[in-house]
Image (cartoon, rainbow, N blue to C red):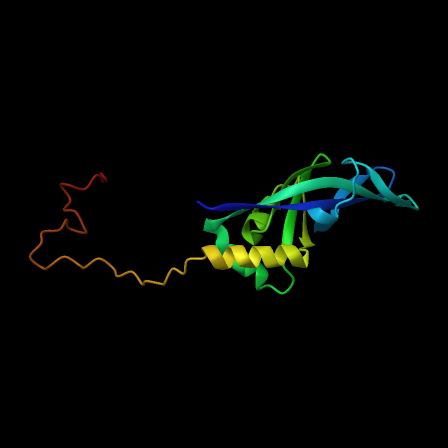
Length: 168
């Protein structure tokens, strides 16, 4: 199964909590091509203004699989192509370009999932990969099995009283 890995830089944002009972939460904020990634260690604060921190989360890969090509086409056709970033306990778990996988990741209440705009260069690579590996599967309507002939013995729909398991 053909695969391709696209590397992207990930930026997160952490804001002060809204109440004293809440905790500071780090969320994915933006993506950029790996070629333009800053030379920082993951977790480095890039900017701090009024307690809102922009944090470099490092370079992460999006793995494309040929079997998901039709899902990538759906993503590209949806206006703004997106990548889904899943985080748990402040660590990046995965990036995906499959919208259905991104939706499935969001079902876990303990996980933070954000759908971020895909950089145009990445969208072009995704479109090229999907075009190269998409296989159109035509719709084939299934037919019901034929009913048995009238000569074929069938079990009766109502059992005689001596064969019925309900006792009166």
